[in-house]
Structure formats: C-alpha cells, structure tokens
Length: 226
Image (cartoon, rainbow, N blue to C red):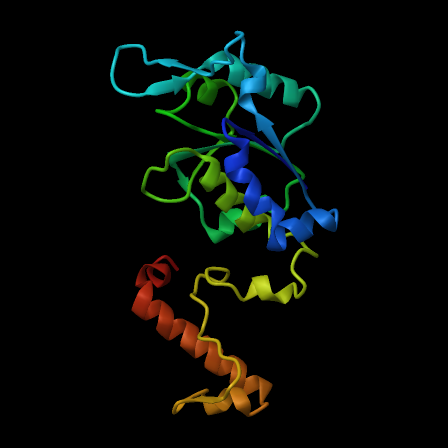
C-alpha cells in the first residue's frame, strides 16, 4: 500500500510513522507513506496557502490553487483508489471502514487546516470525507495519523500475530473481552479460572460471553444495529 498525505505541517504528523507498528510496516515494505508539504505548491514567493474568507467572518481558508496544483501533480504519477479529506463533517471512521481501506493500493489524504479548505476542492477532487469524531482539531494531521494507524495495522504481515487484529473491538460488532497476564494472583485479585484451565473451547465460550456482556454494558448501541 502507498499513502500520500498532503499537509501544511509535515513535522506534526511525521512522528507516528517513525515508531512502533507503523515504522515496522514500512521497514517490511508493506506500506510506504509520503508526506507532501503543501507550501511547495504555493503560487507566490511568500508560499501563502491561505486567504481571507469570501463574505467575511473569522478564520482563514486554505486556497484552492496550491491544493489543486498538488493533487494534479500527484495524480499525474499515481492512480489513487481514494482521495480522502479529513474533516469533522465527514463520515465517522469505524472498524468496517478501516477494514475496507486496508485492501486498497493507493490512498491520498488531504489534511485540512485553519477554517477549512475552499469548497471547490471538495467538489472537484475529494472522493471520500472522513471524521474521527464529533469535535474539532486544530488541523487534519492528527486525524490523518489516526486513520492511517487504523488501516495500516490491518494489512497482512504488519502485526506479528495476524489473528490479533481479528479479535479487536468492533471487528464483530462487539467490544473485546477482558484480558489478563501474569501474575495469576495480584493482591487477591485473581485471573478467572477458565483462562488457566487450558480448555480452548471453554475459554472461547467465556470470551464470547464476556464480549457480549461488556458490549451490553458499555456500547448497547452496537447490538441494536444488528
């Protein structure tokens, strides 16, 4: 998979891709991530990429020309399966979406900033708009990092144990069951006996029941959707 990310602040989003699972995924050659500085496509000597909003009002707007120049240049080199704009009014990211995007080959992600981007960019270029929640961030960089992490970890070979992702919360519309590790007894708080039994069938049954109970308690809306 190849992911291009257009951003005003490359340094803000760089760190997540230089550590842990995302770093190893790139080292294994399973994914490549390219950060593009939008200011490189600015049309004046001052490298301006924002301007005042037509009609007045607070906040600056990302200009259409630098973004269009950037996307046109990238599209001349790569055929994208999806061109994504990270925005609070997009479709809320969920596990099913992450599963779908993990099967794609080339993704372009545009990070918004300031008051947002010129609406015409959304009309002309964007194929999908994604939000990570009903709140506003200072820019789309952190949201893009969240999106990429949720997708990249699902690519076969990224996780050392590929079955780990299959048991994550939301994969089967349930929250994950409780997990434990050593010691078996911590100040009187003990690991459930079934997990120490070695009986695979009983363990799986217990985990499923716990997942159901936890979902009923914490996220009953997930069960209502099925």
